[in-house]
Image (cartoon, rainbow, N blue to C red; front, side, top):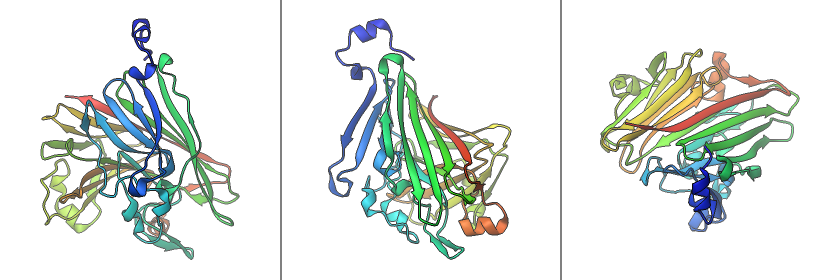
Amino acid sequence: MKPDFESIRKAGSLRQLAGTRHCVLTNGGAGGVRAIDVNTGSGLIYTVLPDRGMDISLASYRGVNFAYLGPQEELSAAYCNNRENEWLRTFFGGLLTTCGPVNFGPACEDGGVSYGLHGRFNATPAANVCDVTDVAEGIIKITGSVSNFILFGEKIEVKRTISSRVGENSIKIVDTVINHGDTATPNMMLYHINFGYPLLDENAAIYVNSASSAGYDEYSQAHIGDIGSFGPPCSENREKNYLHTMNRSLTGLAGIRNDALGFGVEIAFDAAALPFLTQWKSERARDYVLALEPSNAPCKSLADLRRSGMLPMLEPGSTAVNEVEIAMTMI
């Protein structure tokens, strides 16, 4: 919403009310990483990293952190390696890590080509980054493009818009995926949305409006009763992964709430475009994180999806649009 006339009159700079601030990180392996701090003016503050796929790292509401930040923090893409499981070494988590655009899930080989864990998106700097924020008009908006091009191979561009309204408590991500090549290409996109302490705690409750849910493996299925809760850190806990299949005729909804803190975070997405959601739980010391991950396919390897006939493809010259909104909810 637009700031009222009296508010504007009382502000020397409109950044007293809301807006963006561009900076460059300098500490350790994050040296040189471009960052855009966003303040919506309502208590929601978050940081966009153009050099890490225009993903979102830090996020807080009224001074309370709600995103997970990995111990290696916001490393430069120069340290990223897409072989096998090396993706984990530079996974900063943050509120949003995007996986894709050609593959996500476990590392695999398909058609003689090796694909690393979760793809290259988050390790690719965005081009044509443009901040068209206009606080007086109530608009916070950042755009850019992330390309996955290779000679004699895929030529996929993702045009991203991240926006918020001044005075409101939500973040909208709109991705337009374009196949610039001359052959059909795998189109796998997963939005790895990560929650951390103190929002994530034993008081937290988790919900997903899925049509069905199941564990990805025997251990997760054996603990499916834990799907809506989170425990204390314990070295005996293994990862739990659940696949939620959404009702494509409804808006997909998933979230976490903490009654002790008085707020939660809800994710809304177009289930026709993103008909699956993976729920990842890690209840270990320092690796204490919950991810709710809307996607256009189950979180399996490209090779497995091809074998099962579930691999999404994008035809030459075609586009696909994915929309995800992350919003604060008051309790």
